[in-house]
Image 1 (cartoon, rainbow, N blue to C red):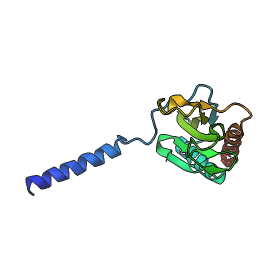
Image 2: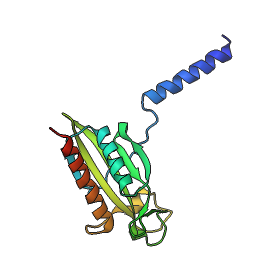
Image 3: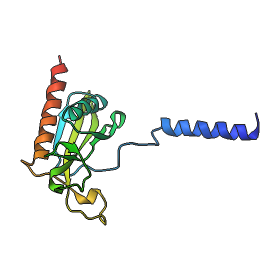
Image 4: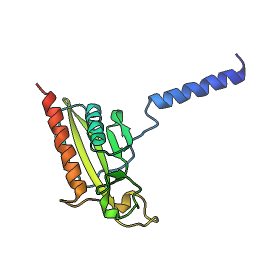
Length: 162
């Protein structure tokens, strides 16, 4: 094999190793907002994300990012009035929400689930995206949506337990 062939083979091997080691992460480096509700669910994290994906799509939300192996799901921005995927700056920004779910294994088949429903504070492109988000207040349609999904996932998971 030529030197060029060895280099190509080495580059391909390094790429596969990097992917296999999880060097390419889908889950963003975000800390859940402090006021985000936390649940303990009796299922594995990646199974929980699968359940959440089904529930979120059943509610009509698009999924922007999902990684069951990393315990993360993020929806597209969603207008709670029109029930459509939109830009976060479309219309009344207080009616456009994004849901995030962080599922972290606790061991013994349990998972810590942190759930967020956020809106944009203000149309300020100078702020980093995360600094411009806040949890929806209680009673907001985005909060109602989040509570409905949290309740449904608990019911679905509990229904599978012996």
